[in-house]
Length: 176
Image (tube, rainbow, N blue to C red):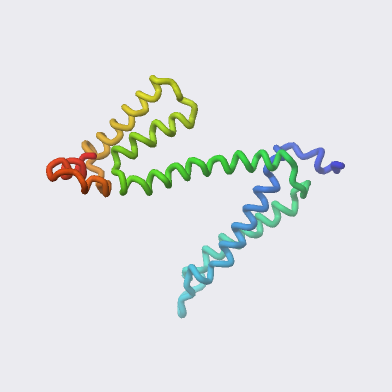
């Protein structure tokens, strides 16, 4: 049964409790690590201490997170909170795609991995026509040409390039 305070809340309800709990937990975790991550320097003014301002900021975060949680008009999770949490967690999928890309580039090389991942991401996002797949491969090749050729970004060559014959290996390491 909802209270009068819960009924009069005008903002969106979904995810509020999860956000408040997560923010408070993260703030407390960071504040608990301040002694390990910062120093206290002898014979230094209080405001010049390396630990002082981070401690103030984290203390305010813990206080604000606690007040936010305390003042919420409801303290129970609903199915809407779970749906909102699934939306928030879906973002992590793309972080995992990026981490896989970063881990595979030194093994297979920049060009081959880019030519695999760009169409795969296009497919994942719903662009599944033949035209879009061709366009994504062309985009991948153009990204590699711009970054390695024109901008001279130094990206390590793939370990697979070591198995290529001499001149082709040098070209692949420099431009692919």
